[in-house]
Image (cartoon, rainbow, N blue to C red; front, side, top):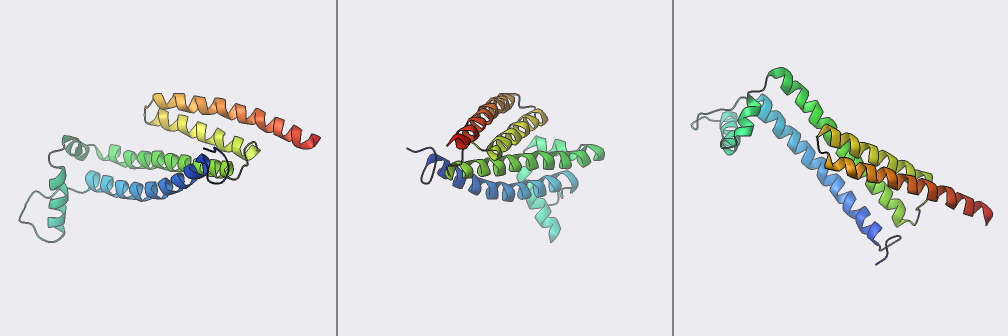
Length: 169
């Protein structure tokens, strides 16, 4: 199987990341709405309620057995106010990582490998992966970010060699 160019692995990854990008936006919006509802809307406990309260009861009835949801309800207001932007920032970083990865694989699909744009994309992706791993306390992902930083240096050196070869021909 080819790794670069049309009908290659990079082409498949480009398409896959494009699909994942749009799905992640939709899932993120739904997640943020549900998180907001769980944190800020008081659950209705009366099963005989009507109208919007019945909808509220049905929604929270699904989560009644999950103790973590009820613990989130008990958070102080100041903590709730800080949780939503924190989650939004993490989601923003993740979506941006997906978008930049898609751009990188689009360049590889077009047989554009050793250029400064790819070096900058890899550098940005690696920094964002490290930031997200620190924010989420996922220290295994720091290793991935560090590997991407090494790969960035390889691409940087490859770009210099490619530019030198282009000038000699």
